[in-house]
Image (spheres, rainbow, N blue to C red):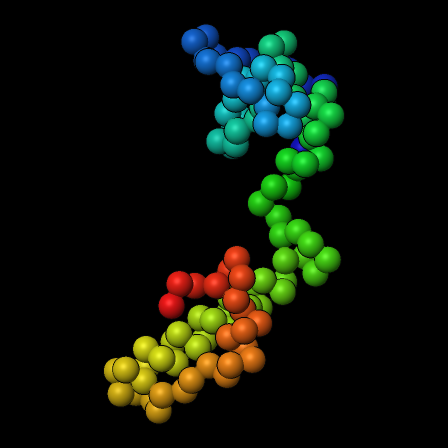
Length: 114
């Protein structure tokens, strides 16, 4: 849904905030669907006037050349190996060690601390 021509009512007493993209003063307003929308003082969506708006659109969506699927695949592999280790500790299956090559490929920002 586009809010470019829509005006939100900013509830009385709502404190202003600063846009992390352009530094403008904004007010956060809840939609009927309980979503937060950054608004300008006149109630217009700040997305329509912010020069950095594209930086924040679809913020929760995966990004990157593979749409975030590389990270998802690495995390799924890590969970699979952790489940195998837990099962081995519980005596359900033989212990399976994660191959060194896979461990090395997963090291970095996503690596778990063990």
